[in-house]
Length: 151
Length: 151
DNA sequence: CGCCATGTTTACGTTAACGTAAAGTGCTGA
DNA sequence: TCAGCACTTTACGTTAACGTAAACATGGCG
Picture (cartoon, each protein chain N blue to C red):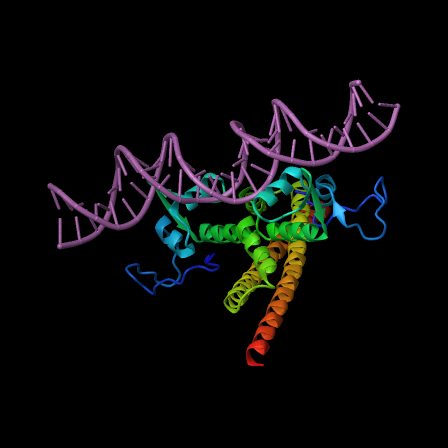
């Protein structure tokens, strides 16, 4: 019920130096940052959403990975599946060497996503309207109760 | 990928009379209206989201049920779980005979839902921003390709 | 009457998105 | 040296939200 919508605030400089703008993260740091489990992060990698560097056996995450994770979690909050999110991320990555057909295809997908977003916006608008109605009904009942108490 | 955001348009007056504003629906009608399977509708009933009348063994759905189903599907599109949706629906139903504590509790929940909606709105805004960026990058690459072709 | 569409219950199957547990690796400080 | 932590792989478990199949009821109609 109380999910973290943003990145957790880092606790100043703990043991890590962080000169100005950190370059790499361990899986633990990243998991604390976004308040997800390491398992989740590894799972996202397995699903092709992340591709961290490897120092020996250990995963090293860069800014790029952090951004991807952020996008992934945002997409999830909007109800997209990991597969859908991966689709967009893959497109984003394949951009520079994309041929014309690929790029046209991407514009189509973008247009579709945009339409989805518009639809979600409308859903939210309607949902807020419902909330308004329930609240006003609720308040009017409360008022009735008050009047009965006082009168 | 191509889910129906709205109710399917009814095919005029087919075999059913529908004098002015229909009162009841069969499970099949409802399933066609919203393009979900009967199984889904029965499942929602099992989960306490619908409570249709029974004529013998057969389910009869009224306007109220249709509205509930619509709200449920909208909630789903926004990424809410059936449990969360049921919570709101139950509150909505328990309104008239709610005591003060119940009503206060409902206002709290409404406030929370409202905050969720705000957060989702922000997510959508950011997501649209990303889409803009990807599209502009995409178009600029296309332009480069064009220039190379023409020049 | 028989058939077929549409309904019903019961129950096991499936997929996505992780959780959880076991068992091993590698550095680090007392 | 070794205890402890953070990391790793492997693999089975879990939950939500239905899908699918079997087996049966029922009302209309040619």
